[in-house]
Length: 239
Image 1 (cartoon, rainbow, N blue to C red):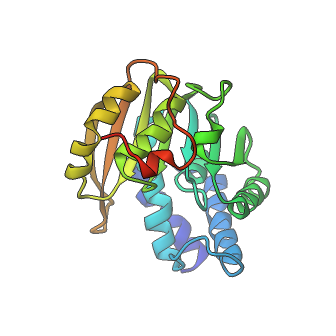
Image 2 (image 1 turned 90 degrees about the horizontal axis):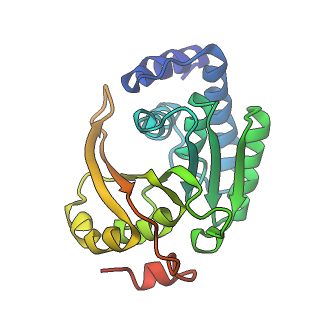
């Protein structure tokens, strides 16, 4: 896929979610893809290596949550991996503050390189587990907490809701079939101080790729005992 074609298609597809990409942003996305492919030869960042698929399954998929974010929102991306959805969101929302959290240090080195090369500001890439990162200065410190396919909802929300300000939102980017997960997560959502605001099904234009966005609003403070110590939420989920 030639650079010109990549930028034209990305710009056209981003409009589905109300995003009008400037030339600088188009350049940043193209540079990000090149860095992803370059680093992927040295370490396992993504199984998706075709430019067309990167454009759709990583970039446009990440942009799909833009309608839920307001200017000025402070955003945390938990389990960001190679930077999804955090880096694409930062490119299209340059005025917002971002924290990207991942438990694998080599991914953080990659993300720090991306931030430097793309000249992104007001963004940090941090090595750590959500259970250990949720200290007093971070607890309930974010308007939006987002995560893409990290864990089942009852586990994922124990990572996410303690970071979320009361009145803020968790955006869980999930696969299509989540009815059982939603049922299993009811108790966890209540205990952790949330309520399901919306479950939206999104189909990416010109594709058959469909996913669910589970939007959980924080309505009261999360009890101090959550998140439990590292490893416990996944081993002993709230049910």
